[in-house]
Amino acid sequence: MAEVERRIYTREWTPGQSIPNEADLAIEFGCARVTVNRALRTLADMGLLDRRRKAGTSVALHPVSKATLSIPLIRREIEADGKTYHYKLLDQKIEAAPPTVTKPFGLSDGEPLLHVSALHSADSRPYVIEDRWINSKAIPHLAEISFTGVSANEWLLQNTPFTHGDIEFGAKNAHADEARLLGADPGTALFVISRTTWDQKTALTTVKLLFHAGYRKQTRL
Amino acid sequence: MAEVERRIYTREWTPGQSIPNEADLAIEFGCARVTVNRALRTLADMGLLDRRRKAGTSVALHPVSKATLSIPLIRREIEADGKTYHYKLLDQKIEAAPPTVTKPFGLSDGEPLLHVSALHSADSRPYVIEDRWINSKAIPHLAEISFTGVSANEWLLQNTPFTHGDIEFGAKNAHADEARLLGADPGTALFVISRTTWDQKTALTTVKLLFHAGYRKQTRL
DNA sequence: TAGTGGTCTAGACCACAGA
DNA sequence: CTGTGGTCTAGACCACTAA
Figure 1 (tube, rainbow over the protein chains, first blue to last red):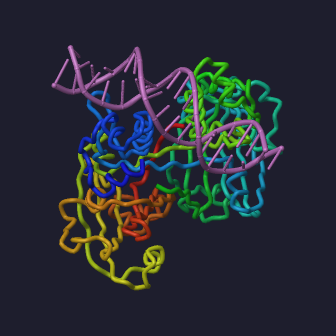
Figure 2 (figure 1 turned 60 degrees about the vertical axis):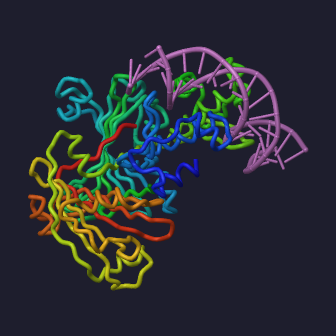
Figure 3 (figure 1 turned 135 degrees about the vertical axis):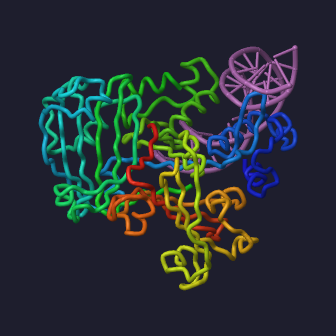
């Protein structure tokens, strides 16, 4: 794997060029084909190679960088940063959901759903506002839960298995009340993560996370 | 792999719980240990399992979601969206770099580096501002290149191999000139990607991408 | 020290897709 | 039709690390 990586990096094998097949590489490197397979598969996962049956393996033309972001529990993200985590429930009630929520959920407009909002803090400085809608019908025992002690973020992740989800990163100007909660000026640019999780075809919850001004999400390539 | 996934999902194996070792699973499923290994390794990559030698494999306590974002060439991102790509160089000159640039590059403050800024558009609507500093000393033939026809984004990716990079996602209020270029109001929240790429220990380039208002980066979990 | 995952080998059959 | 990657098997040795 290191050798193939080196050849790509040094342009010995140039983007778009086909490379020898697994069997030939196995002979060249004096190893088993499975070993070559695993190396090439890993490099293809990283986006360095394109692989197609019969057509063979070639160096990726446009090295699509793939950034893998880890999205931990908010509490853990803060604690991993060496700060003290604090959580405060702002509101929890069943209300008529707006179309922006009911639509992806496949429910009719105005359907009553559980709406929870909360503020997570790090070292007593506001960190992120959690604004969440929960499909109360799909989650048993939900009515009995109060999110005063445990955040919905944490409770759901621990108690509600999901099969898949989608996630969206963006930016948004802070409203007056959001700004107040985060201790920023109204209009400040906030980093936003929106996430919806599903169990099979049932939407479970959708959440909008409004991070404090200056928040950055980092990773390596 | 599907069966293990099912057991985790149905809470048959609960978070934190140790699961049987590879050899036992191979017997249970009537397959080779390598096959179990590959399945568990893949699930561990997905963040569902924690694996440690001697300690064994356990279901991840906090299912850290990993979102994989693909960061393609700007041109390809726009074209993949079915829109017409247009590019315009705004400025290209050698100037004294500010400390925010020289510091990560390990150069002394005020060092003259190549500064390039450009606007990428989709269907003649502003899409993203590219604001880039290039380590002219580390990249041969750079002085001869004009980024009028080909964007630095594209030229560098095609011509400059890099070993690693770091990337950062955030939000920022648009300055007056940025707002003008993007056709937005000053102060509008913009989604920002900052990226620095390295060849071994040499920084090659650092770029700040200021996306148009309303831009979202999406992926699945 | 010993149990666990990490990785390798040699050989095999299969599924897909290009020619 | 056929070359390619996809995946499996049985067996082996190694490297790490918890006990």
